[in-house]
Length: 265
Length: 210
Image (cartoon, rainbow over all chains, first blue to last red):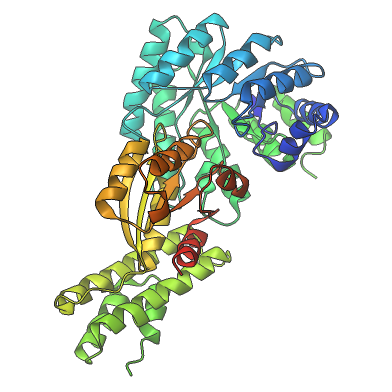
């Protein structure tokens, strides 16, 4: 299981304020908290700083790396900011979030994946738009895995994001993703699957309930990485409990650590 | 005066078959076709919009309510005999170039239509010249731009600039929305308004055209 901590994102008001005030202490504390709570990667997203994203990326990467030793996930659709973040990332193997099957984006991001030997989140969408059905997604999955491995990206570095859409606007939105993850797990057992959890619950009340359950459901069909808020004790508790129930936690070791860390109060 | 409160309630509850039944009853009872639409069907949908905005109703309920309202409107329209349904205004809406997101934009379009606006939904991935050409063709009062990516939100500014160059900026109000969009950003690029959700977008259009 790989957990990417999502909190260092300038679309969050407190992070935005910290960036504007160059409040390094806040950012350091947040990154530390994420890692202590179990994040294997720290995501850095400053996309909302549209006028100075590369500079902001540089400051955030340097600030975070001054306190944590886990690798970073450089999260931006902007190739310039991506390049800056990756050039500075020095804690182990960085992760790129994200590449897609859109022609331009694929060509812009691929050289960086290769140059930095990075892990890469590959989002299941192409130039024809957002996929609706599992079959749409399967076609894109085949192309992404085929094209990435043909260019030399190891399967183990590929994290397919099936593209989660809200269940509020399409009854089958959850099922389409579950079917896609099962398909990937079956046909491409060497690649990983990842997703964020908030899209599924857009437009509905009690979003946390849906997000948590969708994590358990996707994990059950083989998803093995999540981009989430690791400071949410309930969801981290669910991660470890679900792993144990799926036979992926020998002697329930992680689950018991989570218990002793107070995740099930 | 025909009493439309049951019809409105059926729209609010999203009961399509009941809406059809009550619409037929209203027609049979001699109610004015336009009154059925405005005081029955749209009036119900206005309540849905308000409850959605206040967090009492949710997206799936809005969708079924809009569908049930549409079923009623479809029954009444043939009876209008050339009379136009008075429009609240014409709105063009689309997602900007490089951006393929459409869920939020379609929700806004649906809520506007349900609120009595004429909506031209242009689709996704639209370059500024597409918006400008559509403004010339459809002559809307409002144009709504959607962007969900931080890399595409700047295209909104390009649309506004091109409208200025073409001398069209004074003829159309520009409103913007999408996850990364803020009120500050809308002021910065010279838009006329920003709405954080679909129901607010309807209120915003009404306010801009008042």
